[in-house]
Image: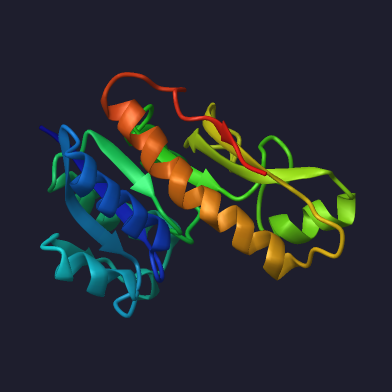
Length: 198
């Protein structure tokens, strides 16, 4: 049985989709822990309600990113993770942390990478006038949002779309794609998670 540790910073809707899928589909893995850098992250309530161990490593308590990452690594390693899943974890991780989990830490990003890395992806997509937008799941590397892509899902950009309407349609696909890619990864089928939506 493989161990998955999920890192969140807020409501954790992608974490919820992963937990629900792992339970419903009886994955050969368990969500060993959900860890947040914020004690008031709403996703912690959901995790506890589903019998998942939670932990908090408050980023505000550390003077530097490096110090925080050392403490976070200790917290994650306590659960012997086979896979570390970033699900709305709003911290840029240091190179030593990323290297420690090389090849076994993944992230979900709301764009069709390599297009629109970083923040405000839906605004970037609308300003660029693209016809298709979407979501990517990728291996985390030291370069932000540039790791190997494991799966993508597309949505059509509609006339009259706003950031909010586009984000809402992309989020639906995030909740489908992330569990699919994670399951493929833990079953040794990385890259088996791509899909397209209207």
